[in-house]
Image 1 (cartoon, rainbow, N blue to C red):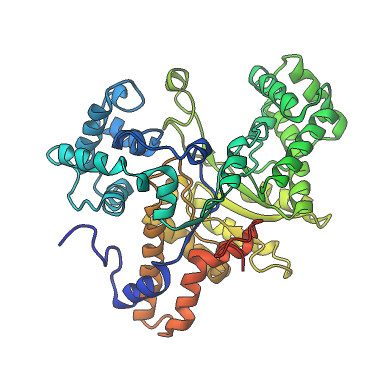
Image 2: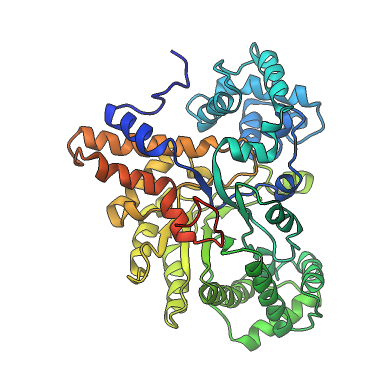
Length: 474
């Protein structure tokens, strides 16, 4: 039997029926990804399999390093074919790592390739995939069509002029593409050199001088308004833990002024300044009806030598063990006291926090909107089969799985769309097994409707993005 077959990950007849009838055909709503929007705007055609598959993929780089592959084959300047061969040599040693599943699912769904990737098959797979990549249906836009991506949301800095988003909107793609507002750089008063460089970019983007905290916040608000005018309905924040100890505005102004003079904020000052801004961002999101995403718990840039050599986002981050629940609840409560808690999706990176997060969301559901606060899908180190099941189980036990807004790719790669299929198979296998055991009713319309909604409709209805295209809004 081929490794990737029709019943892959589906270990009961109920699971197989649920997947085929209720999950497989649903469109994709990828509401959080890191795809380069320039590639969509320019309809990038990829030159080879290394370019589309290995470029920027720190999951693969980590595995290659662990196998003993030199850095030149990961982030370095080795020829594309040599990099691909190094990856092919690594793949047989990724057994039980999700990369083994993802690799062969992607080869099957993109190129119809059933062979296992290894040193012996590498050349054949390289040639076949590269021939297909030259065809228009494998351009950036072609891939979105191929995988029935109804909508996606990129991750964008407030200083971005959104020119690529404007071009995409003008081209009327079948896939709706929206920006998401990610103001992480605004909090970095502990790194004044980088912070001041970014503030200069903000001045230019907002067309204003920023001489004090008031002008800084006003400029950020102007960019928030600008993003809204161009279709943005989500914000996003990557934090160690939620920031919920704001200082008075006068103290925040002093921290800002010192950072502008080149004096780094202390850890306590950065936390207080960040909390001050996070309240502003939360209020603006609530006023505009946006969804706020909080990605919490990653411990980043752990290898100083590699950070200096290669920069961030190259595979040297890990799960953090930060206390989460108390600060998260405090932040949400500060906003809720003024009835300015926006819709929120909260993602954790440490499985220890699954039940805490799943219980926190229940404290802030208000009955006005189904699933107003969401426990986000398994993220980063938890977006594999076991991590997905853990998240689904915690949410099911403490909340309403039926209102869950489903999977995201969280990826920089156009090769990642089979991750939605992977999630759907895991979901159907979990639910199908319980149907088979009699723990859930053998009522396909009831159970199947929940599966279908988790795959697409819940996210569509929850995000309510500004599009009249068929299949996006009701």
